[in-house]
Image (cartoon, rainbow, N blue to C red):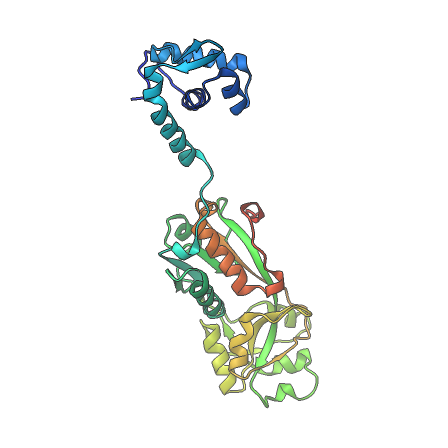
Length: 326
């Protein structure tokens, strides 16, 4: 036991001061080590002597030497200070190669499909002990993040929970995707021609309308949605096999291609500019603040950034770079 004292409260600074005094054998040098004054260190030494009921350091000519009790306490005091540093200091950085865990992400199928190749490649190169579970948008994200059922939500973040941290990843625009040889690929695409085509809508809630319908209505136009599907990948597959039009998120003009259009390209779909003012789509990620300073979660967030952003736009982001939702 380091201390035996009637004092009701012992603060951690006493252990730190004791370690410095026993290491330096000098009040002046111990004060310099802890960036305090010799007078303050002398008062601390007096308190330690009172608490431990031992002089600890005594004069021997021009120097001070430790008592037998002080010699016996030297290693224990140093160990206590090391433990305090580990307990109260900033978390150690994590070596991704040593991670052995599974991260659970929640994302729409198109986002998950775009993420998976980049995440797997990074895990193979940096963190071979990491695996990923990507869930459909089936859980209410706020509570699921709070209770740890998911580590990250990725997509269009439309819920606002005061404690949730949200970071925008990439801005996109919607384009019309059609099969090769579709009539809309011949000649300029006008709002009237777009409205006249048959469409497939994507909605987990079964909704037939969205921002495109609002923009068409402003020009007194209405489209016909023949089918609503819950999956972007299913909708794009249908568009590749029929004459329906599917909306696909794509990179903004002048930006590098987005991985969210890779599946459309693999299906051979043609992407057409929509001649209407549609709101941009923002893909972001959300997590619970208890994970903000966690090294493993920090690696995960950077892996998601690298997987979804063009290479030139990605940099290692520190904890201060995240933003709370406003």
